[in-house]
Image (cartoon, helix red, strand yellow):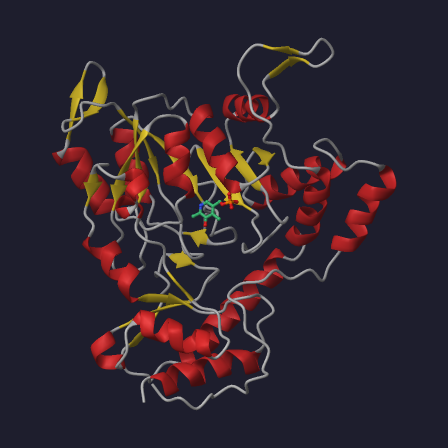
Amino acid sequence: MPSKPIRGTNSPPIPLQVPRFCGNEWKYLKECLDSNWVSSVGGFVDRFERAVADYLDARYAVATMNGTSALHVALLAAGIEPDDEVLVSTLTFIAPANAIRYVQAWPVFIDAEQDYWQMDPNRVAEFLVRDCVWRDGGLRDKGTGRRVRAILPVHILGHPVDIDPILDLAAKYELTVIEDAAESLGAKYKGRRPGNLASIGCVSFNGNKIVTTGGGGMVVTDSERIAHRARYLTTQAKDDPIEYIHNEVGYNYRLSNLQAALGCAQMERLEEHITAKRQLSAAYTEALRDVPGIMPVREAPWAFSTFWSYAIRIDPLEYGMDSRGLLQWLDFHGVQARPLWQPAHLSPAHAGAPVSGEAVSARLYREVVNLPSSVGLQEAELHQVVDLIKAGRQ
Ligand SMILES: *Cc1c(COP(=O)(O)O)cnc(C)c1O
């Protein structure tokens, strides 16, 4: 490792992923404060739900306090019950695996494919064909004896999962499909939008996502029944609001009007954000083209990726340093980069869960680095990051 700093020691740090507020955010927030509508009821909540539903070409959207609660409610609304099994991507942020446990169901972890790093439809098929049996009018996992009820593909890093084969398998085996589109709002799969490719989709508006409300989420569906159920469960299962009658255990999962106000302003900027991310991605890929051992994240021919997080895979032998070495090198120079997530099946919290494949996600976890990808990242900053990556191998 060279010891001479390449970026000046007083250069401001380059963060991984920060939001950008340069539209109507202040204006809409002020309207909330001036009108006293700050809590979980208000015009902006309805408007934000409508904006997201329209964007995804879905009939209904129900706002929630974050993406994880959206996943929890989606699983409940889909009728997933204790001891059911749900197939889920193992290469993901942990939220969907945890949400499966909230309803006392069990994850079955599906490996990633090596081209675009998404849930591998072949591994889904392999598990359903090899490890399951049709018994008593339902599909059962031969190993655990549990009912297999649903598939939860996670569209990671702004790119869609190859979902058609998964939808076909789900139809054949009578499984519900719940999408986690938290990272891929704005992407396209064969012209259609992740988040509305299956019966239920979930979105997140966490601070690092392409549209943010600080914290927030949404359950998206074309089904009136599921939308009603999601709304009911997120509002304390309120059957009579005047008499305070609650016939089931519900949740206080609603988004506030303040957050929804931010969301409305951010949705107005979504197309700009996507364009900015795609430009950054093209610039990174071009600048890193001739660096040995660095392979940029790719976009499938059937996909439109937002490149929400720009990532590179590192061949340590060719590059001369492994991903963790590069992370340290970048960190030393004030550049915030991150690995992918530890595959969920390796988390002690989910130990013992059935898996279908694990080699690809394990390798990607070792080899992939996420680079700074904020919408507002400047061209000059991007080139500083690239120069550091080039210098790192010398
Ligand atoms: C961000 C994210 C979520 C939801 O996270 P929240 O912080 O609860 O909004 C879910 N799944 C994935 C893959 C995510 O990246």
